[in-house]
Amino acid sequence: MIKKIKSKSSQPKVSRLKQFLGFVVLFGSLEAVMFNINYLRWTLPITGAVLFLYILWLVKFKVWQADSLNKMLLPLLFCGGTVSFLILIPSPPLAHLYSLAVSVIYVLLIKNIDQRNKEEQLVDGFKINDVALLTCSLVCFSGLFAFYIFFYLQGWLLMTALAIIAMALIYQYFWQEKFLNEKTWLFVPILGLVFAELGWALTFWPIGFISRGIILFIFFYCFLGMVKLYFNERLVLATARKYLVVSILVLSLVLGTSQWLY
Image (cartoon, rainbow, N blue to C red; front, side, top):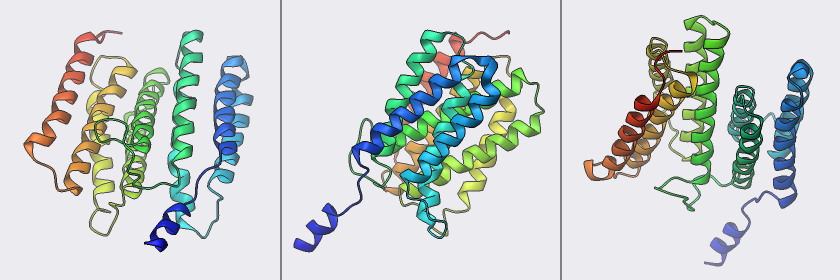
């Protein structure tokens, strides 16, 4: 009993200094990007380098440790997605509010970066890292569709980017929930291709990039819930119904309120 208490109390915890600096670094980076759009070619590389160096320091990066790379993945995706989505927000007040909100979520992510499969839950069985994953998926999917629309990218580039991002998110989810093994490895590329195909189908829909991103986000949310139920041996109609109902309601709301011509 004493040994268990010691091992539990000896779990690594992220200091409040690192949490505070994480908020300052991300919020400051987002504000710097918004300062003047004409300086993006300078602010983006600088803020990207600062965020990357902070993440290396946060996870105490060591090349020979796989856990260091795994812990880096979600913060890198989160920062990259939030910065790319910020550029697409036309209203400065909304952009400042967005910067504050994602910076707070980033602090929660940093606080729990060493706590895999943590028992604390926020809502509906989802944990803090799950919320960060969902937020990351929303901003990444919407950002990719925005670049596809505004920069007239070819469809294969969009599908490739969606497959890579989806595989990275799914791999991170399997790793942090300790679902990753020889049998589940195969699901990562397969599900990545599924999301790429869904993205390709959405290129034919005359709706905005945020609506398309939300649709993929809904599929990702439903996927996370179903996987969690399956590996916990609770995947039955009664438990899966809430994820399906929420997904259908949000999907109907998005499709019903989207502007179908742009």
